[in-house]
Length: 106
Image 1 (cartoon, rainbow, N blue to C red):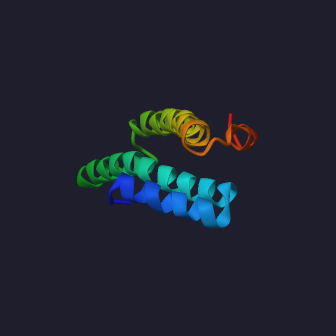
Image 2 (image 1 turned 45 degrees about the vertical axis):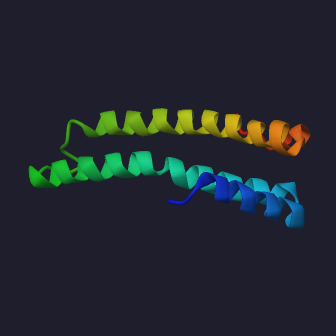
């Protein structure tokens, strides 16, 4: 997760050469998802710390619906970013655009 992206891409190319595009897309998605999970993770930890310090439970907090809305918006943006990333790798780097379109999440 916390390493050089160029190193990851080089290793991903080696995985693609050995196992094929579908396996390399799996690892590309897992890297993308783990990177994007930092955003709601850090935000959720901050919200939990703020609630705990004020002795407020999740059930009685008036801010939890806003956090839920934030997570919904985050998930939409993350999926759109994944579509862009997968198409970028498929079309520009690996020349396998048909595979990316068949596995595209809308």
